[in-house]
Amino acid sequence: MAALSAWFWNERFWLPHNVTWADLADPAPGVEYPKAGHLLAALPLALGIFTVRILFERFIAGACARSLHIQAGVGRRAQPNAVLEKVFTSITKNPDSRHLDGLTKQLDWDVRKVQRWFRHRRNQDKPSTHTKFCESMWRFTFYSGIFIYGFQFLWQSPWMWDTKHCWYGYPYQVMTPGLYHYYVTELAFYWSLMFSQFIDIKRKDFLIMFIHHLATVGLISFSYVNNMARVGSLVLCVHDASDFLLEAAKLANYAKYQNLCDFLFIVFGAVFMITRLVIFPIWVLNSTMFESWAIVGPFPSWWVFNILLLVLQVLHIFWSYLIFRIALKAIKRGKVCNDVRSDIESSSEEESEKATDGPKTFLHKPKGENGTNGHCAAAKLRTQNHSSW
Image 1: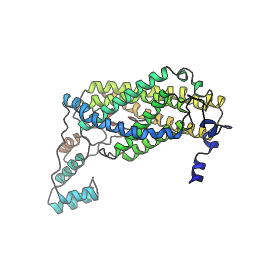
Image 2: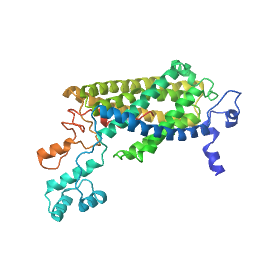
Image 3: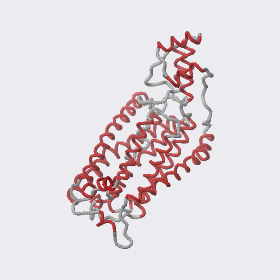
Image 4: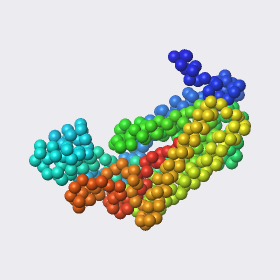
């Protein structure tokens, strides 16, 4: 075990040349350098954040939802049927023609009735508009709060105005209380998202989002341990700048304020592209790759950190393409239409099937899951809605 620990905490990987852990172990009185043990404080804080979230969604967000006439009720439920329930839970949630033929003969039902049962059963497992509104309101509140805190903190920090200060004196840079609280709070929030995934209603992107949260936790922890927290705080702030706008657009969508939803989504798209395609590469990547090279010089963890940030930039380009495509469709149609990556079956599926009397393949729907015309695409962009890294 000691050998594994020594291998993992190898100074030649984590620290610049001629710097050891011993050099950082005994700072001057009143000076604190980052230590891996500091990050343990994020775990009880994550539990606290999760508890606050439960209370917030139940009382505050729930009250707001009711005031906007967003009810907590569930749509039409499938009638109890042991045979179909067994097929649904054990075989398939979307039976093909072979399964449909067998079930119609076994139950003496017509095909449409079996299809309708599976549709209603699938919708039972999907979060209601009320649930999604409360979840988005919590995230909007946290994202906007942490962005305001982070921006105010960075406004008073020299490295916001001159990114070379991220590297002057590195790694002997003091971990100030403000920077520590900013970092640990962000880390705790993403830990809380990992906890909540196991009790929330599971969506199709459960595994993707779990990996995303895990990667975010890893990146925040990694940059803290090797004391790249100054530039890390810039990364966090750049990403937080657009997240709360996406959640605001979702809230407008769930409340059936379509025009406001479209406007907020367009604003979100503009801020997203400016911060992640312009500010991030020119301001942050330029500092981590070139300024740090000139001031500190490269070392193994430096390479890892920059490679991960470059991968993140590739994701920014991909996400921006999706947002641009949605915005372009909005201009052509005069409204923001569904995201083609939708993972939620809309309630309008039932209406469309009644019209077509058969199975339905769809990309865009005339109505959204809450019944509003031109369902806001913001409600579908779940990949970006907590993407601080």
